[in-house]
Length: 484
Ligand code: NAD
Image (cartoon, protein in one colour):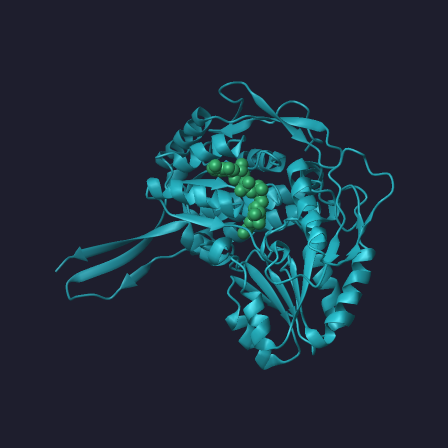
């Protein structure tokens, strides 16, 4: 596989690489330099329509008749092809998103694993036989929805693609993917590898372009039978409204403001690196970033001082420098993070520590430093809203009840962690946290391909990853047979 190409990255529709119907393109900007380094096709409603028709034709043709075991073999082969191309795909991902090359390599490996996992699971999605009245046989079939529409964000383009596309194809759907206009080159490359792996034309289509044009056209297309959306809470609401208009189900994976709870009996040496990595990794641009540090008040000062020391040692650089994190994604993100920091300072919240920018960074990059604030008032925007940058809000809590109240005090509920040596408390707190995943004495799950994931409240609904995703990506049909 070659290095990033300069010719426009085109859509992949019906197995062919095609330009936008208007011939227009969008520039792709390298977050480390602010310079244009590639172009993508600017998808239109017509392009989406072509892709949806191609997906429907695939279902009516070869793909729709492909046995589950064969679907699985194709997906596993795609996983192997992605593995074989880890290095090339990782550099594409790193340049496209600004993430460090180590994180990018890990992302591509996790992407491969999604295809491997769901490939292996494709023929294990079984129905049921239900005992019923004398003279009847009842079976519950699991069938694909049909054409599935997928919209993913820019922070983990390849991983997000694997996470949503692999289970959709494993369950026998035909998919149309609209990746983010800010970072999508790895998605286009992986879709091309899918053809190489033997996926029939039309089973997976990728249309690049703007969310409000191509994305909106996909979510409102009457030929789409299911929508999977990963992105912001605001756009998630639009997507859900569009799905409602066509009466199709949707899974929404949205934002977060996830708490890291540190009780005074915790193993603080073990907790420290997790606490820092949970917010600094990927420059804080992770839905499940641990952006609130809640510390029991008797150890608040000492532990937060240790976190501050660690923050001062974090370093920001280009993907190739491979330091703790890279630049932010774009000028909008930079402005957003800077505004949170400025507002916190204007409110008089103590800035406890900042990381370092490496020497010799390109001047046009969207650079920001990991920043620690505390104590942050509980009702301040920094305590409640998603920054989507490496800004950590520290807050003290009194006791277990107060910790749970504070952990659940935002509109979000994606993940959370609890650090304590008390086994009873670990279980009590995990059960009372309102979110979709809880980490006990750890944070993050290295991709967690097999672990059901998703939010509550404004973090979304539905579950991805693990076998649960296959259930979402399929639908049951109950067949009642009276045979006497
Ligand atoms: P975004 O909502 O702006 O964009 C996400 C995707 O939606 C992009 O592909 C975009 O083109 C598309 N889009 C934009 N407007 C649209 C519209 N009107 N109709 C249809 N599609 C449209 O989000 P972003 O800035 O790309 O990503 C950051 C957000 O994503 C953060 O809030 C983050 O927490 C969230 N996120 C959540 C998860 C999760 O699993 N819960 C994972 C990653 C990111």
